[in-house]
Every structure is written in structure tokens, then in C-alpha cells.
Length: 163
Image 1 (cartoon, rainbow, N blue to C red):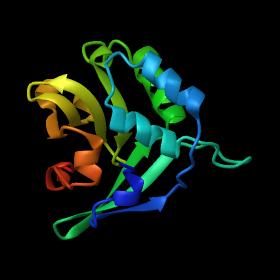
Image 2: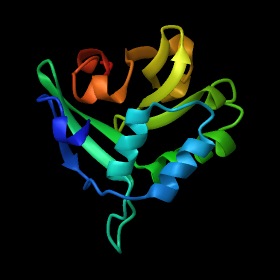
Image 3: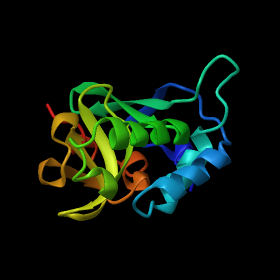
């Protein structure tokens, strides 16, 4: 199932252009990730990680998400940007994130202080959210089992953003 063609009616793309391609970067994500990544996420990366334009780097897509009476932002990284973020947290932020960075894969943020990632936390494998300053499973909440559950079925939309 193509996630972008079946987005939940409470979610829409507001910035960035889906661009197929970036197979080398997606392959590198799969090889670099310290965890096994779900197939729907890998397919999603293939649909957004192509060349943006000659002047602009593809960093991903920004989504507008309707949560209760608010509209909030969620940025999901392209494969290239996810690799950059992994390196940033792995190399430059150590030892702050040493206890978790090798057990998760960062997929996005809320354009603020919340990070979204795949991992195997206290509630099993799935998509989690935590504050950047306390990135750890003990302080994280599971949103959904898969990206498809979240972006298409709407599972976890009302709990994915902390107030």
C-alpha cells in the first residue's frame, strides 16, 4: 500500500515534494540502521527520498496533523536526512544518547523538541515519541506499530504530540 496515496483525512503534506528515488540512500539506511526496519517504512522512504531539485537538498516531508482542536506539524526525514541525523546523534551527541542510539532509528520530529523513532521499547516494537532532551524508552510513548498504522489508519494521532 502506498502510504502517501492513502493518508488519513486528518493528515496532509504541507511542505516538501514526494520524489521517488534515492535507492542508494534507502539501501544505506537499511544497512546503517542498528535495528531491522519495517518494510512499509522502507517503501515510504523510497517514495520521498528522490532528488528534490538542483538547488535544494531533499530533507523529507512536513505533514500537518489535526489533533483535537489544533493543527500540529510532523516532519518525516528523507533517507538522506535520516542518515545525517543518525550520524549527528551517534557521533556528535555522544555520550548523551549512547544508551539508546544503537537501539532505535530516528524517522522525524515535530519541528520542535519531540523526536519520532522506531525501536523495541517497553510496549514492543513500533513507532515511539520522546523529548529530544530525554531520549530514552523509559520516557517514550509508543504511538503505533507501523508507519502505515499511524499515517493511514490514524492510530496514535491523538497521542503523538505532547502538550
